[in-house]
Amino acid sequence: MKRLPSITDIARETGVSAATVSLALRDKGRMSEETRERVKASAAALGYVPNATARSLVGGRTQLISIAMPAIRQVPEVVSSVEYFFRLLGAAAARALELDYGLLVASPSESLDRVAVDGAVVVDPSHDDPTIATFDRIGRPVVTIGRRLDRIGPEAGPELLVDNDYTRATFEVLDHFNEKGARSIALLAAEPIDSFQQDSIDAYLDWCSRHELEPRVVMADSPEPSDAGVAVEGIVTRPGRPEAVYATIDTLAEALLERAAAVGAGVPRDMFIATCSDGHIARSTSPPLTTIDEKPVELAQTAVTILIDAILDPDAGSQSVQVDTELLVRASTGG
Image (cartoon, rainbow, N blue to C red; front, top):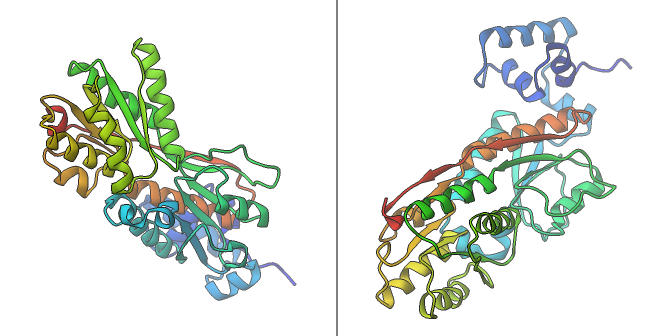
């Protein structure tokens, strides 16, 4: 039986991605009219039939993808307060629907080899991430938002990555502290360590070495309020209180602000505080927190597009996209 022409065939013929072909054929997405018409002309010439049911049967696909956010499983109260995850999830769902795919929100603890999905997006992968391991084993594509912390094994397919440059973002925060006159700067992070926190810690240690400053990394057992409170207690009340603290998670920064106020340490008068992720906490604290805009909508849209391209064209190879961040200076650092 003659094979039906596919979106991948049109993509190869026109030199655009499979996702772009899908959007062009349905008069969606942002592209030039020349590209849209070129795609449609190629589809007509190849005899492409836009029947989603037929395509899924021929290709053995479900038209479903999953997204795994380890934080949902580990600290649900944190996710409920961090706007970043909800913006990311909403953008991922919207892009998936735009490309005719459904989105399943999955817990890493699920037995994903029994879940009928065509691929997965993993947000902030951890060491030995179970979702990545499962999808590598069953041969389905997985895109990570944040780099893989572990070496890719023999079962892994092409590496598909969307990430921020957390080294550059961390340097921007620390340079900002330095320009404000801070010389003793601590970094506050929390277990479990994921890729963005590891990158931030590595960048902090590098920055301190370059500036010949003594590093001080403080770890909380988790971002939950009780564990955050224990970690910030040592920062605020022990001798040698730092002049500035970069907290990788906004709940840690919030706990630090509250404890500083309780002991009469003014922010930013006595200590500068900054965090990563521009959400409700960062904007609503008193004073508002200097932070990093990680552009979660762009991260999610790019990740889903790359994933569906990989599903439609398994031979597309590795792809890595970096999304720029923006330092938002607010009152917690005298902005």
